[in-house]
Image (cartoon, rainbow, N blue to C red):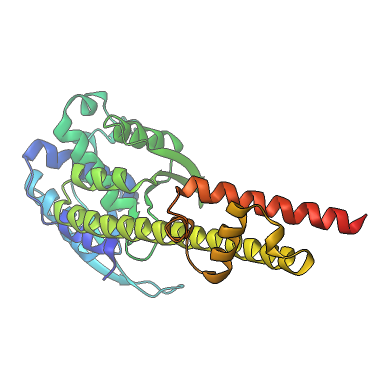
Length: 312
C-alpha cells in the first residue's frame, strides 16, 4: 500500500463532529459525484477507486439522510484494471444535493457557501474531504516532497488553495490534466497540512522521515565540505612541494633566506601534513599557522620569479 493510501485510510477512520462531517461530505460529492437522469428522476453516483473512501461516503450519507443508497463495484477496462466503487443514491438525491448547497433550482452551484469559511472545524473537514476525493502525496522516503489536490474547476481549485492558505501553508495552483491542482512543495508545510486534516499518524511518519533525510543531507554536506577542504590542502601542498623542488634544482635551497629555507626543508620532508601541523615542526621553534602560510607564499613567489627570469 502506498503512503498516500495509508494517509487516506487513516482519514476514513476518523470520527468527527456531525456538522464538520457534513462539510467533508460536501467536498466528496462535489469532487467525485455525478448526476444523471433515470426514469424521470435524478440519480447521484459518487465514485472512487478506494474502497475505504466509498465506505466513508456510504456511512456519511446514512448518518445524515434517511434514504436508500447502494454500494456498487465495477471493473475498469482501460489502462489499470482497478475496481471502481460507486455509491449510488436513487430516490432522494435531489434533496441531498439541495441540503448540501450543491444543487438549487435545477442547477449545480459551483461556489461553496461562504458560511463554510467561518468555522475552523468545517474548513478542516472540507479539506479532508477534498484530499480524500482528489488528493495525493509522495512517499517522503523515495520522492521529493509533493502534495496536491486535483479539481476539475478552476474556481473550486482556487477556493481550496484559499482555504489551505488560511493556515499560512503557501499553497499554489496550476493547470493539470484537463483540470487544476492546488499543491504544496515544502516538507514542513505538507506535515502541517496532514495534521490540519487529522492524519496525525501519517504526519508523524512523514516528520520522522523528513528529519532523517535532513540529517543525512546535513552529514553529506559536511562530508563534501571536508573533502573539498582536504582537496584544497592537497593541491596547495602539491604546488608548494613542486616550487621547493624547482628552487632546489635551479639554485639550491641555500639561496633562500634562512627562515624560508627552514620552512622549505620541513615541508619537503612532511608532504602530507596540514599547515597547522607544519607550524609545530619548525626546528627554530613553532610559529603560527598564518606565519607558516606567509613564508610558503614567499617561497612560491621566489619560484615564480625564478621561472620568469629563466623565461627571459
